[in-house]
Length: 117
Length: 117
Image 1 (cartoon, each protein chain N blue to C red):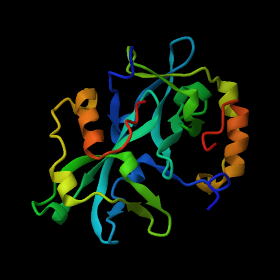
Image 2 (image 1 turned 90 degrees about the horizontal axis):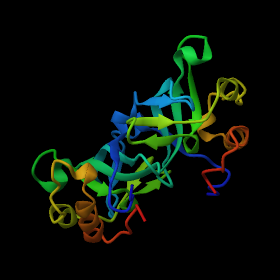
Image 3 (image 1 turned 120 degrees about the vertical axis):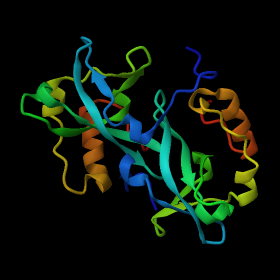
């Protein structure tokens, strides 16, 4: 698809609940909400509910946005993150929205570029 | 502020209702919701409620995100758009979320770069 001629806009309120699929095509969870860098306007994290994927009931974890790729045909996101990735991710403190150190460790854990650079 | 060391993340659900201030510092409206380009993860528009600013009751209009600048001290956004800018903006069709032609005319009207390039 030619992204220069086709828009694909979604309301911030409608993203919530969008399915996320793993590499094998099975749903691994859904987006609860996004975290946005107010200064740049970039989406930084999708805070996902993983449900059964983690085998411990519904639980929310922030995943770097760059780990998700929108799939028009699926009307959802695909990712290559695994259960081990999520379980091994740095624990977030209460102030994680303003904790660049936690952000660095998290992005390094998921091996994706720092969105703020 | 050194953006490389200070995060400023906000939940997509909390952005709704954030105040927007004009050049003179007066509130001109607030953000109703954001429109996000799912493929790039960039915020493309803030759909704003202008209230009295437009003198015709509450009305919602999409404003290119690049017209808004976050002001930490105000805990809100500032913009140099005027009432005439908003009133003169291209009318959006029902399918504006997927209407690149409308997007081009709108960004040209507000004289900001096309976010999708």
